Amino acid sequence: MHVSKTVSEWLERRKALQGKSIGFVPTMGALHRGHASLVERSCAENAVTVVSIFVNPLQFNDPNDLKRYPRPIETDLAMLGDLGTDEVLLPGPEELYPNGYPFLVTADALTSLMEGRHRPGHFNGVMTVVLKLLNLARADRAYFGEKDYQQLRIIAGMAADLFVPTAIVPCATIRAENGLALSSRNALLSDAGRAKAATIHRVLTQCATAADAQAALEGEGLIVDYVEEHWGRRFAAAFLEGVRLIDNVAVP
Ligand code: PAF
Image (cartoon, rainbow, N blue to C red; front, side, top):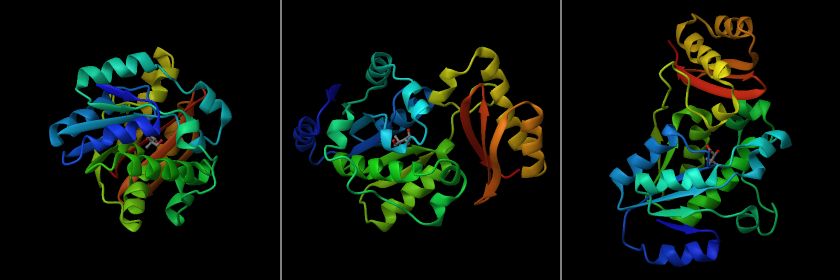
């Protein structure tokens, strides 16, 4: 497994991959079984698997959230090695944003709902960095988890509209045994918090309406940003122990 820390180093590596099928998994690190499932799928479907680890400052609307985002880089690299990753992109902000933020990707109504409404600027940051990464990787396929369903829809829409030649592949959410959607942020919860966080999946799948689900979460002491239904799915975002968690399921 080779780790490129600069864009120029990666572009040299990329030249040597010409003619091979390439799968790409963009991440912000703090990898868990959910990421592992994306990497495994990429390895199964492509000759070469490229994973990026970059905690993108542009998509954090809350500076504290950015500061405390977990960064266990050595563990992440060991896990990627075990999974059979071929190439890792590990650039710093000065590599991906050498000129600051002179050009941003923005979008329409899709970004003013749910995550977009509660995290102003978040999706501009996501789309901008994902477009940069897709342009660098020039992969055949890029893998995104359905846990971030709104993000997945926005990225698929952006890629189609801007004629990005990489196929955007949706991958099912991976859950803990208690139903909690795996997320890098779960590492910030206590054991009791992780047990309680499973309430989100339970009420999303069991309550008759979104309003009932919101009331049930609040009854359990979570601070709810929203429970909403779109595209045949039910979405929730809520704070527990100061950690913001999101999940979504097919409308039951
Ligand atoms: O889902 C994530 O981890 C991030 O939003 C992504 C797609 C890697 C962009 O920074």
